[in-house]
Length: 109
Image (tube, rainbow, N blue to C red; front, side, top):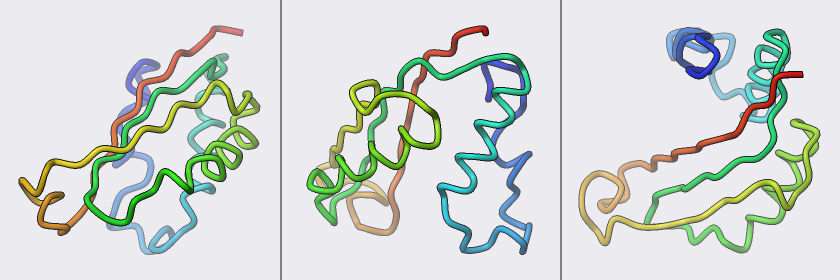
């Protein structure tokens, strides 16, 4: 969203909005992609990393890729999902939460 000057995720989906509390993240991804498309862009590929100690998620990656690919209309091979840990350091290492980062390539249509 930042690359298209659309603001951040909290602007569009604030954690104070009760209507999205507990919402399926695939719905938020679809709404986000609609914003990207409204600016005349499409997603080419994604490189993402999820940082958490537990659960081990690699067995879920193909299912995650399939769900994301269907929403973004790109191939599974264009979606990289990697997992890592903080080796027990910080809030993620203490299993108090997780964090994720993603970079993606956008193409002007």
